[in-house]
Image 1: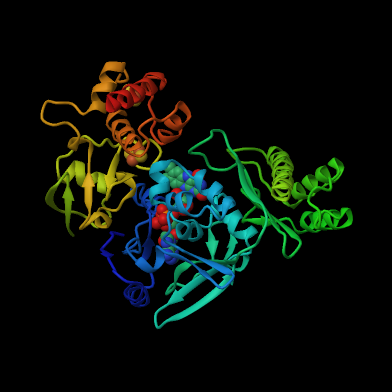
Image 2 (image 1 turned 45 degrees about the vertical axis):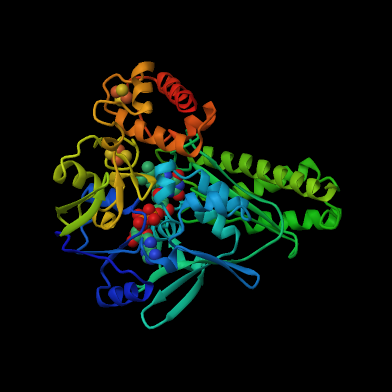
Length: 295
Length: 154
Ligand SMILES: Cc1cc2nc3c(=O)[nH]c(=O)nc-3n(C[C@H](O)[C@H](O)[C@H](O)COP(=O)(O)OP(=O)(O)OC[C@H]3O[C@@H](n4cnc5c(N)ncnc54)[C@H](O)[C@@H]3O)c2cc1C
Ligand code: FES
Ligand code: FES
């Protein structure tokens, strides 16, 4: 089929009206996923809807205790401006190249919903909701795991657009790390986001590229929260966490993965990578907590 | 569809198929063939241009998305026969072999030096991570960036 038309809305309302009238229209934001499909004739939508100019999607704001990140915010802007979210910043910094980060958006990462999407483990560890909108001022918010339901599969309705993601701001250290064949321009073979929530006394771990979608590691999370509790480390970050417990935690994280063999790596390698990433991330977080305490 | 865009300071227009990329519009419709087409998937950077001052791969921008915006291509750098300092540095360093990657690398380097006039080697390598060269092995390219940075300071 030939592409017939490109719709160029200037406001969100206009875009939602257009989407309602032409539900098959394919949104394009930064185009870093969409254009590859078009250039290689993998998709030929009859209509394309350019969402890259909608000011409503290019913003972020604090909403009492929560944070809203617009779907159209690029990785470059996150790296420059969102220093309050180190894990999100770190993930954004690993995406592609400067050219890709200047265009690629978190909304596009959600839209594509690849298990290797680098923003996604971070949103999962933040327990983020994905906010969707349709014409007439109707919005709904879905927990990330109800939004992404399989490899490149989401439950977005044809007349909806992604407005952005929203999460409760947690106090505590966190990081994102990824294993690949190069330091840049690489799709993750395995990735991990670890986050401490000092207020809730919980730890959250999310894995990318080791399953059909992003996976959390609830068993490992609970194990670690208990270890920290039993050691009294929630109250006193200087209390050492036994190396055996760190190892056990890492092993349990790896157990949460459901990796497969593919061109980028074997399942066994991916599981091993998860163990290493989990160990490192926890070690960094524990030392961050100590530093914060002694400052 | 008709696209109007400011390219290198001039108002230009092109009548393109709606699925056309900015790269194809520049090369096939506007005759600006400095930006190269090698991969059409954002991997090689040989199509690097500025869109509203931001470094992007022209192959990943829908031409219609560039409508009403400012595009600057590698053709904007030299002033007549006078090479831009980054271009001159690439020649002086011997950083050009087949030359296919060169326009993209020149644009990416000029962009880097606008943001960071004194980049260290790691910064240079990271900034150019989206530009592939199959000939030089990159060392001379890094040398060229250093020469260009010194030139700018002088
Ligand atoms: C060379 C290269 C390197 C890359 N490296 C990485 C990497 O390291 N890590 C990584 O995670 N990704 C990487 N990617 C993939 C891509 O850059 C990311 O997935 C990016 O987040 C996509 O964002 P975008 O704005 O460009 O999306 P687009 O391509 O514009 O859109 C992607 C999908 O989301 C939909 N969509 C976009 N916005 C909305 C909206 N508001 N509402 C509804 N649907 C919407 C589109 O219809 C489409 O299905 C790379 C891509 C390239 C070309
Ligand atoms: S042609 Fe655009 S990045 Fe290769
Ligand atoms: S000089 Fe030939 S690709 Fe770089």
